Amino acid sequence: MMHVLACDRVREDLAAYHDGELSIDEQVLIQNHLHECVACRLEAVELAELGDVLRLMSADVRGGDTSETGRLTTEVLERIHVEEQFSMSAQVRALFDD
Image (cartoon, rainbow, N blue to C red; front, side, top):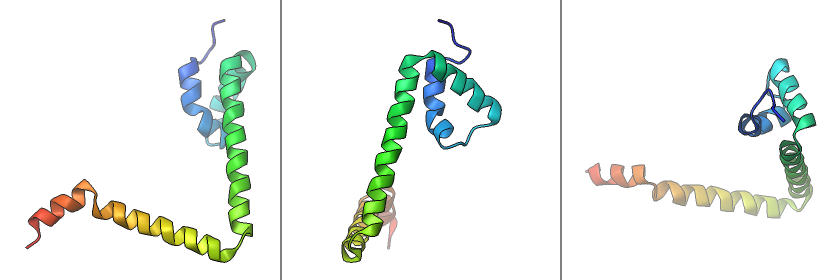
């Protein structure tokens, strides 16, 4: 079956469609495509399920022990700091430091 939008275009825009970031015209085109295309519809369902899981996990972290949340935040910030130190731009800057 020939679709108005190609499947690869629809799949590129699925996240924006799911988040309501597309124009009304684009939303309608994608919605019509999803009604006709089983493969893209399954991809959209997987994206929605992933969003649901992330929201549930986020609620667990926020509702959980604050010391654990603080520990997680500290670990993430430490990892970012280490990655910045070992980044290529940091290494190049270090070469030119006097």
